Structure formats: C-alpha cells, structure tokens
Length: 163
Image (tube, rainbow, N blue to C red):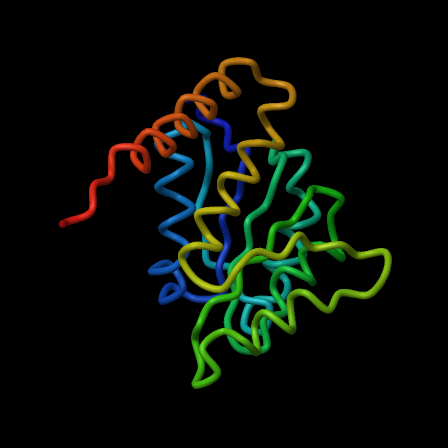
C-alpha cells in the first residue's frame, strides 16, 4: 500500500466513524491507500473547501463522504472538486438516515454525487465502488478485488441451513 492516499474518507463528526469504519476496513483489506478525516460542512467550512480544492493535487482519486442530518458534506465537496464523490447517508437523527439520503441524493444537475445506501452497508459499498473505479487502471487492485468478490461468492455457496 502506497503512503500517498488515493481515497479520502471524510465525515462530518467523529461519531460518524462508527458507520464509515466499514469503508475504511474494506480499503485496508484491498490494500488501497486512504486517509480518514473529520471535515464538517457546517463547523469547518473553510477546511471543507481546502480539502476539496486540494484533493486532486494531493493524489486523491475518489472521496467517500459520510454525513447525517442535513448531510451537506458530500454535495459541498462535489461542488468544489472534480474528484468523484461517493456519498454515504449516516443514520444520525430520529429519521434513521432517510433525511440524509434525501439530502445527498437530491443534487442539482451538474454537481453529481454517487449516493450509496444508508449506514454501514452503504459505507462498505462506497469503498467497493471506489476500488472498482481505481481498478480500471490498476491491474493488481483488479486482481485483489476479484479475489475478494470470489471469496464472498464462496461464503454464500458454503452456507448451510439447519434442518
């Protein structure tokens, strides 16, 4: 794994890491260099702008952004960079992430955010989608991703039900 991060995993607050850790774990397993940071759209907007504006020059190829509630982080990042942004709704309010999902998925034409499922499944799939994007130009990663996928298939085939 290279020292220079290819994937940025950002979240609005430290408490969001409980969900985004699913993305970080998959990135680790697939040996994809990454960074994880708290970047709040509402509490640190200047940091958000700097993070987005410098993402490409720092070597990031994909950004995974998790956010709960109003969930402005993924969209604001996408507005300030051409690095692909994958949004993960975090179930942080009484609405269990539905508010976040609707906020992230309703981007205006011209500012795309790839939106994943609510919660840990969405975070894991965001990492896998980031891996697929990177694997288009990295044969070693393609091989690791293919092996990971095959192992999931084998897990299902080996399941036995009682009875």
